[in-house]
Length: 142
Length: 467
Image (cartoon, rainbow over all chains, first blue to last red; front, side, top):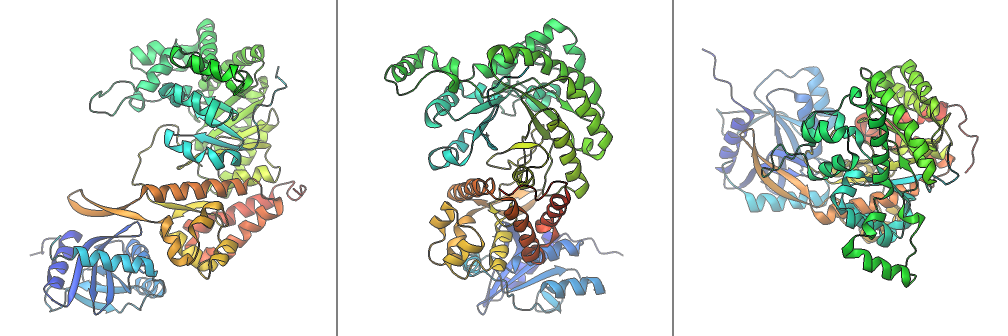
């Protein structure tokens, strides 16, 4: 029997709940960053991770995640587990974006398929604002 | 028959969009542009404020009034109030215009709540009366306000104390003939009405000694057919106004193809064979044409917000994002793209580097003082607002009022500079932008520079002027 389809909102919500169970992590969903709304951001060991969730249209996700690099340290596109085409891999690497798969059966909410390199685009002003936002709005539910 | 008076005071025209625009049209900004274009709906909405703006605060800056007669040919829904208190009622400012313009629009639109059709203008007496009332409304837009009971004493005092002189400054520099929107499908019948209006208006304007401007508003698809453009121009050869005002519906020079831009030049050049041409909604491509002496353009109008292109019917507002006018690209871009561009240009190295490679306008000198990387944030400051859309929680950033003000002031100073560029600087700036920003911002943001440069540099006559 086919499993019922899960929407992006549900994926974000599940990931947020699991991240927030870890006391070393501060996380937040729907975070405004330079005119974009980032699906999920978390802060761990002074490192900022951003996630753009997409069930389909990975190209659009990369475009959005590219902007997250201006504020975060590591930017990821997050999808349900899938095959990674050479075109998708090349586009992720070219733009300095990592790929994570949503994951329900591990300790971590994500399975990292492609590690994100540290952003060399980060703008200190936007990063500080993002850290401030997460600190003020940290919560475990949407 | 045309008058010897100049229809516009110079190439830089600015549209007075809303009352909030005023602060960027006055004070230090007053000398940055040559002429105002005011919508008739604004005159109808706040006549006293417009009159006092023109006569006092704008120190009799030359102006003309766009009569917006095309509004009455569209679906009536665009004219109706969206307010919950007056659902379905015609908006107050349009009601005033309907009353002022009279038949046939007063009964057809105002009473029957139907759009006007070309057939409504068949009767020559009706048409003549309509034309005269539309022109009279513009002619007296300011003057009649100075004679109103509550302010006439004040104006009398200003005249007697010689603080102000009544006269030509109270009147528009040109009168605009009634006009209607032309699409490929509706071209013939509406063009006939437009030309009749222009002919009737020509003699009326001449009798008042005021130049006549003929406004031609077309849909973008007309640009796809060069023969349609030629037909249109030929049809207007029977009128000889002092000026043509051209408006292509929702035409963004930034996203236009090379073919469309060449067609736009063809359109301008065609009308310029009859009378000088002003682009009513234009960006730097049109400014460049004017600076290079091409296309017969004598002026380009822009507004404060989204003012370099405009749809004939109001379009949805969308979420206002802080946009920074990037002088290198001659384009308003989202703050994050501006940030990337400034960094790529080397503008964050120091305040003086910012002034050299990004912008040296008065506003930027005020904002970028010590550390450009942090100072620049003032052009993007926003507050976050959370809401639910289609069942999904969303948090968006809205620019702060002071962010919008900084961006608007910077925009006005940047436009002022553009209208004074030499032809060498015009082409050089496009070539520089393409080389330095193409890879950083991609074709969506920077691609227009290449297209503009290619079109401009291959037009006959480029380089003959050395301003």
